[in-house]
Length: 624
Image (cartoon, rainbow, N blue to C red; front, side, top):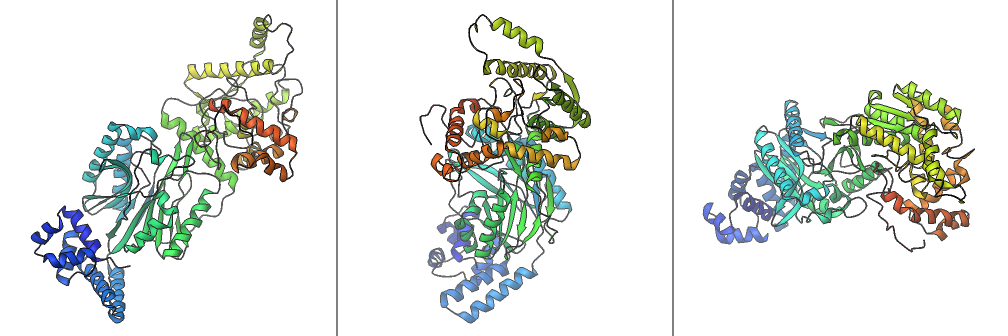
């Protein structure tokens, strides 16, 4: 759609800082004509079209063509309208080629100086490849989510200084777009910065997400204006992440003449999220007939993991470029590329867990590796594989801590996996420690029947040992519990829950088995018996998990309905589940919130993860 006179006038006011009166004086424009331009009652004259093009650094021929289109519409002259629309299309096709590149980067929250240098370095790299416009993700300068860092004056000041530094370092003919906060008119905005011809312009995100893991209304004001700019004869509209999930911002940008939409994103991964993105963007491009470039962040940040997967889509809804998932990448969008084949969910999830674990440990810069309590069971086996793939076997230590209930199979399988993965493996028998604790506690427990107290004591001794090794070695303890166990409290507080990061925190037990089988397709590292045997905590004689819990396929089905889908007890029972089992499981979920509040962080991969996303009261009488 052609750009209107009043829009050009608004850009001139913004560029010059002049009032309408000053513009009339400075450029010898009749005040009456200027009033008509402002109201939209009159289109620019050719002379003024040429003048405005010069002020704004635009193609004079294109501004004149847009002016003629507007005049034809006002006069309802269909012949002239078609003629000048054809001329505008020819101008666009004959303009200097536009080469856009995507920089799918992995910034660190708060590492403003190094994030800025990365933006500069990649800009020069892209410039050497002949790139006209390089696009970075949402809030790429400061990382996402910065949370309450945004409330610190010094943090925002550093970001502002970095923006100016970036501007001074870029090649004059290079244009870049990146995300950073903006202070404007007493408020803070989540903005897209365009640096073009040495000048800075900003677009402010209009739709602020405030659900799930997002709290943007806590920090930002919402913008209310579209942003469309010209680059080598192409009119490009900017949106930021949530804007694209709402039709309005894109529709307005198209009304302002956008032929291509670029969306800057920090979109966290969860199962099937990329399919949702593609479906949403396809709906937008088919509705508005525009090309679309979707630029996403990659990397782990506390409980979130960003999967990248940036893409370009043409106005027919066809994906023409697809960047890799869970990898840093820069790609020039100069020709359609081969779209990678569909990947099974097990691979996608496993890659997400590896990246999240790697970035949590490496980005914090506090730990030199990881230590894991290797039990011979499925959860610790998968956690060990993730840790080795994330950090390298030389940075991993596996500790087996047997007691009298530990089977010989567990000892053999733990040692076999540690050997196959090339990690440091040690055994510490906890029998003397358990005996000592029991002896000291016996006067206090006199006359009381042994119960889970004695079982939990074993787990707490193991947790203490692992934390001691962590203190001494500088390695973080990776806890090995899964979502199914954490949901119902089948874990020992200050025992097997001790640690700094929980890779499987959002992984259901049934998926743990699927991921273990997938990992063995890469190379066989998890002993088959670990996958095939009945799961057991081995805290009591002949103990198996099903002594305390329903079979995991049944448990996970109930938990999916109750946690992810938020269904009531009656709704779950109506789907064929045993009423007593449903009531017991849902009660366990609600009663164990206090445990989860004290659990280690872990990567969100589901639609409703424990931690930052799912926030329930610890004290509550709610009956589901």
